[in-house]
Length: 360
Image 1 (cartoon, rainbow, N blue to C red):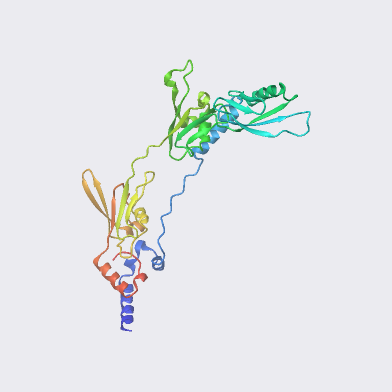
Image 2: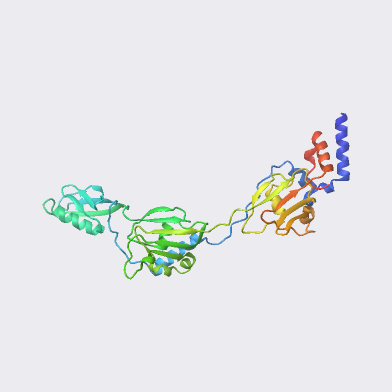
């Protein structure tokens, strides 16, 4: 009973003498009381900028180029590693023949029933059909009709590396592709993509090409703006395409220490300006014993160390300008002997949760 009476007396004294000073950032008292019982949440990320991404612009550029200057149609040339679906039809018999899945071996041949090995490397599917039909008609079937499709393309590939979504070996379904197509086949550009790309040829240079033309530097931004630039940027089997990533500056940090809910080191953003109020938000706000009017910013400069006192209460009330935070700055949120003493008493009697953080 005696303890309960002292609790009421102390609570009344605090409310009469210091309640206003305990209001951090001059928020309503009720909101401050409730905030002590709500777990802190992470600071929300800034919204992403609107507008098409570079990957979307790349796809649009390719579609536009294909519409205005489509590449000449070229029949796919069969090669070692491809898998062919071959069907033989006999007009004199009812029904259709079964389809065989026939791989093209390392010598560029397919092994067919009755007629044995048939060289097909470099031939189009139409030419393979004619060759197989000719051989089956020579003593095996009367007027055979052969159908050939490429079931799996494995003979032609390129290497795409760097800042693309799916780097690696890409199988081609045509004899060649454009530089833009090669990037899109690898999933498009990532956010880390820089401004340049590189095409490295694997085959011997053709006249009037010189040896140095085996490696071609490509301005990606120019290519997106004007896809016609890629008119001669054909990527052939065995070639390598590389998208250079942006060279990121080394990670730098700022520090928020003292009486905050989550003290520590935080990565300093390279793309925007943050201030002292933001920095406290990164640390999940003030701790119960914090003095919002007694915060210090420590900064190292070529002329020596600087110490700046910051009053977060006045900043929140727009009475003082907020202070920009630079990389390697240290923000220390202080407390006071009186505040710690009162907090200890309130904690001991079970009333600490009723008083929000602030200054005293």
